[in-house]
Amino acid sequence: MTERTVDLDKHRGLAAQKATDLRRLLTEVEANAQDLRQRQNELETQLAAAPAASWPEACEKARYLLGLLAAMLPPEDTRRRKLVAAVLEDFDRLTHQP
Image 1 (cartoon, rainbow, N blue to C red):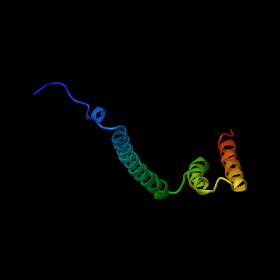
Image 2 (image 1 turned 90 degrees about the vertical axis):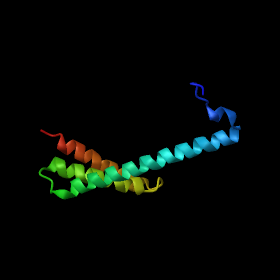
Image 3 (image 1 turned 60 degrees about the horizontal axis):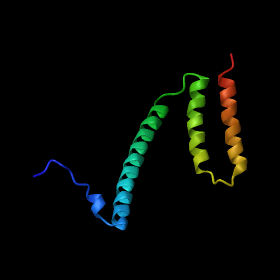
Image 4 (image 1 turned 180 degrees about the vertical axis):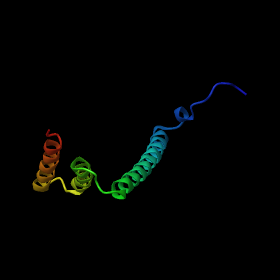
């Protein structure tokens, strides 16, 4: 038995290497997506657990929901995209006033 490892990918054809790389990448993407969904569920549970104690907290909840809405808008819906951006700018401006 040797102590050297053999990189089996080098002994496969280019098509087989590409298929293996795609499978590995797909597995990684699926794991990341599942982790993201779990973290989103945790965040949403926390956001819904208690009412906001201040306007800045309420703005953060609304900012999250507007982000979800904006992600679902089709790219050609520029009017609503501009409206979401304007509301987010209002939140920034109003929450940072003295």
